[in-house]
Image (cartoon, rainbow, N blue to C red; front, side, top):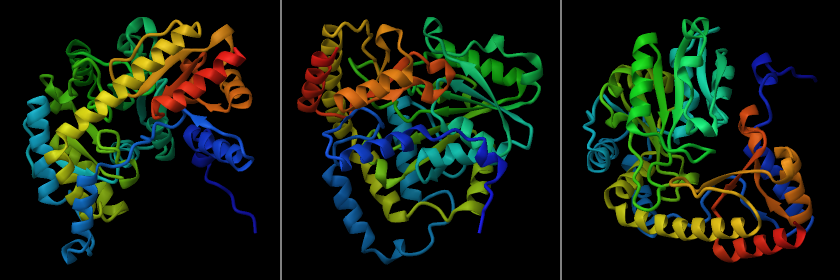
Length: 387
């Protein structure tokens, strides 16, 4: 039998991180010693106190049934306490918080709740591919907002045409930014809020990396800025902060009507987050501040080691103040794909080509600092001998 994919699926480009993982596994099977700076998946284990909380929770029969709804009270309450402690933002536990099966799931479903066919989502580019792909799958249209280095990787909102703005329903923002590592300030968020109010656009802010920062330069939450709750929500995740990528747990916070809308979608698409994981997530938020600080210290050492060695190899590169990504121009004016292929074929090193995040990522590559210093040293030895 022959099966035809839906037109929406046919329009999607290959998912860059899945493609990188596939290529990496192919080479490993051939015996190549691969050093991967590709997918942003922490190499360090989930902290033991979180695992112990999970071990205890899974034996409790109350967690063995469907976990319908916005999440267990304990998890939502710890989210509220975390936001108050970290950002001085007050959240209503009952109406302004909803648990997610990882923040990516929420990003994918928010467009289902607020876009009709032909409506437009404003997506940053280069940007996390899920913003655009979720829009396309849900039969919306994408307008890409270029992120340029000279603008601090913040979109030039005034350049968006009026006819686009009349059809735009959602604007995705992301700070600290993947892949560029840019961090937006209060004035930039304020500009976005005023813009959203003027054109009646929802701001969906992806804040997955706020807890990966350096030199005590703490990124702010979008919700800290006056008026934010009137126009938007924020997606957050435990994945990067506590090395819990495989656990699939995150949350949405902010405007109660938007949170409610996503909740309606989720009621029809899934049965909630396994409540034992929510209980472990509660412990992570309650007791994890010191662990998050320890992880930041590890990443800062890696960042400094990486940047010093990159400069020795001739790269003109700026150290990121947040995320565990380094966004770098390719050498010798090579395209992103050419350079990434060269690194893989000649050095056994996986990097992410910048054009995988959109056409404005062309000429860049992204390194994920999810590699320990010994492996980094080996990678630089390979690069040095080749370049």
